[in-house]
Length: 283
Image (cartoon, rainbow, N blue to C red; front, side, top):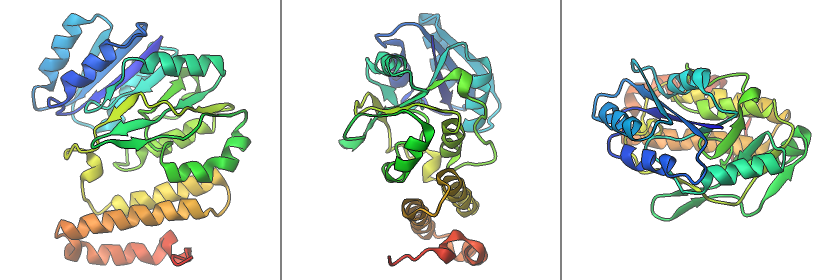
């Protein structure tokens, strides 16, 4: 059985499309766990309508506590041998579950990672299938995978339930997915990446937390950089480049938000002890 976990918060615009894609999977042995994280739109009604149509759906409601809290609650009650995550504004192509399940079982992998499609013909995928037979072997290639960002989200993967030892950090609003994945990877022996693209990610959703601007984001970027560096175990250009890229994207968004002058002193204070002090940005 695969437990498909769907955190929902004000997802009425995309929710029908998402749940239809899950319920229509060619692989049928699914435990569909929906956690409504205090939605204030019609999400609850939509979820209940789908639960009435499909007995595999279980719905749970909680006060708004964030996507990590919702995913963690679902992990506590999941029934499946395997875990998959789906964001409520995304959708699966019909063969995704069977594709991921077949690969993780035939290769005896602990984690399988696939590609994703995005709005406006965007494609986020490996150009080849790769099977790693040990964690050290994977870590030797990890600088390459950092550049692809394929190991950052939880929704293009299938996990073994028994290997999930640490849940999503609830004190972060950015990068919590990557932290979860790094913890999980440390429990893995075999890791597989496939070039198949069975997942659609709605990148243009303006309500996404990724598009929010808030002062603690820089501290979270710092924490992510520290976690990546610790996982790699040595100075890594690709990890530094990712950190610089994340900082640059955030500062640009901050400037556009007209809040830069308000937070300028906080930024200066952060910069004094940041990893950027030891990175040669012109290399």
